[in-house]
Each structure stands twice: as C-alpha cells, then as structure tokens.
Picture (cartoon, one colour):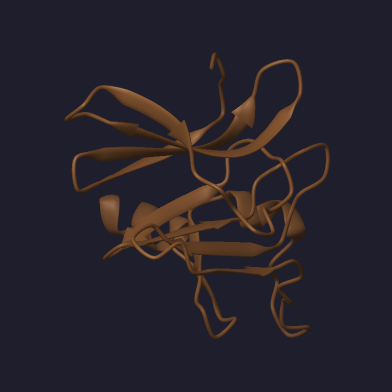
Length: 130
C-alpha cells in the first residue's frame, strides 16, 4: 500500500487511510485495526474521485474528506460514518461569487461546512501565530 499524499485519522483503535498517490491517484479507504493488526478496504457505495492531499477530519464516528488535487483542484465533499457505513458525496461544492476564494485555495487549510459554507483557517492561523 505504498503511497504519498494520503490522509489518515484514528477512531476506536483503527486508523482510516484515504487516497494519496503511488503510480496513479487513489480513492480507496483503508482501515488498519491496531488491536488485531489487520488491514482491510472499507466499502464505499459511491467513492469520491481519486486524489492526493485532501483535507480530512473526524467528528465522532464521521470521517469527512474534501478537496485535494488529481491534476485538477477538486471542490467536493465526501463523508462516511465509519460505524454504520452511511455515506454521502457532494461532487460540486459551490463557492460564493462574492468570495475571493480560488479553486486552488481549497487545498489549503480550510473547512467546508456541511451546509456549504467556506471557512478559511490559514490566514486566521497565520495572523494569530505572530
């Protein structure tokens, strides 16, 4: 499973690994169980496009993946409840026409909320760091 540009999060003794790149972009969701030292692919009904360097976070048992790059800057959001495997994929998030956000900025530190709002964290974090 050699890859780079992937993302991972930990929940209940498991490491969830998504995407990245080896010779091609990947869109698989792997689960490494540290209790029994096993690795398996988590089935997704409608997986997001293959990509590297997306944003990812966990809210409870829900893994949320958005944006990334696969030759194009992506503007989408996928989530899966790792307990129930309920999932959703929004392929085309919209950016407000009044916003200065460029598509490539979606690969920076930001949040796309589930109600389709964009929050840029990178400039806030930089301003608050000095």
